[in-house]
Structures are given as structure tokens and as C-alpha cells.
Length: 290
Image (cartoon, rainbow, N blue to C red; front, side):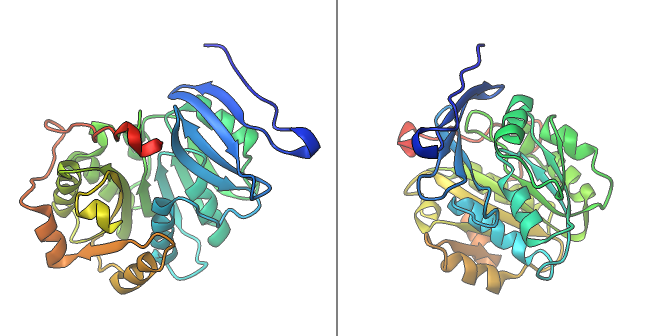
């Protein structure tokens, strides 16, 4: 497939879009006209990441802000952590960790090697950031993480706007638990719409492997009124529920946190997903990206 690339330099120094085929489809880096060195990454028209090179602590997408709250509360403020990111995109969350928790050590697993090359070239990482990027399957990359290494594992993997089936099962979560330190935190970006079968199944799957769980999402998504993202958080130790609730509620697009009995009731009798029964998450309706 041929390469198509527009210059980043427009009239009067304005940045222009970069358009280039990658392994997962057509990647577009669209400049933000309001922020001098900020870009949105789209793959086949679906927004994937937003990065501000001048302010990597700025999180634009609502689901990334919710994951940012989890990162903020995963350890005392500013303390370096060991983090694993399954799914890289434009490396937004790895940049966020590096900016807010200097000297953190991070591993990013991103299957799309061409996308990694594009991002490294056009949106270069801070050379002082301790971020290692592996271009391999997320589950295969996770298997290479040493036992008990990670304070935090973030799963944000989409292929064709769907989470691959092999990243939705109890066997996958066994690998997550193996890689986490005792009391470490797992956070997953999930996407679903009515009747929320996938989301309920993922909550049940996490409940089979972690003692503590919480879910953060837009209330309209939780009511099954529209397709959208939800952040599922889990740990063996109690989660910072009160502070997560406060932060989610104070976002520009307020989120609601469910946990405990309410989350169990929301699951509605769904059963844990195993490798043998796993399917990819549902494809978003075309109207989501209009």
C-alpha cells in the first residue's frame, strides 16, 4: 500500500494533517488549531488518541481523563511507578505517567508497528522518559512482563474499533494478575452500547479474578441509552472509591462511578468469559464518529 503524507508545515507556519497507512488502517494526525503542538490521532476515521506535546498532562478524551484519575490515585502523588500499557495509540497515557510521575518505568505493547513508527517520528517522546515500546500482540507482550512487576496495568486495545476476544477472558486476567504487584491496579477502557451485554460480561469476568471493582462511565451509557466508553478498575486491595467518585463527577463530561452492591446488580447475572467463549467487543454504530 502506498504512502501518502502531507507536510506538517502550512501557510504562516501552521501545522497540516499527516495522513499515512499503518498496519491497522489509515492513520490521520489532525492538528488542534487551538493548541500549538497538539494532535488527534484517527484510525480509519475513529478517534484514537489526543496528544499535546507541550502539555502531556493534558487529557482531552473523557475516557482518558478517567484513566488519568486512576493513574493519579495508583500511588502517592509524584511517586514513580511501574506501568504496563496494553495498546499504545499515540502513547498519550504513557506520556501522562512520565509527566506526572517522573522516573516511572513503563512498558507499552502496541501491535501496529507502522503506527509506532509514525508516532515516534511525528510526536516524539521525551528522551528522558523511561518508556519501552514493544510491537507485538498485547497478550503476548504481557506474558513477557516479569511476575509482580507492575503497579498498574492499563488495557486500551482496539482493532477495527473492537477489543479483540482474547483480551476479554479470565485467562487473560490471570496474566494481568501475574504481572501485577500485590495490590496493584488493573484499568480497562471498554466500549459497548445497548443492551450492554459485553460490559456486563467484562464486569463478571473481572469479579472472578479481583476482590475489588469499580466502573466509571457516562450515566447515559450506564442506562443503555447510547454507545460509549466505560473504565473498569480492579484490585485485590480496596480502591480509592470516594476520590475516584469525586474526580469523575467533576470532569467536563461528568462520569458516574458504580461499585459494591450497585455494580453487582448492574452486572445482572452475567457470567465470566473464558477463552473458549470469548468474542470481540461490539462494533460501534457509524453515528458514533459523526
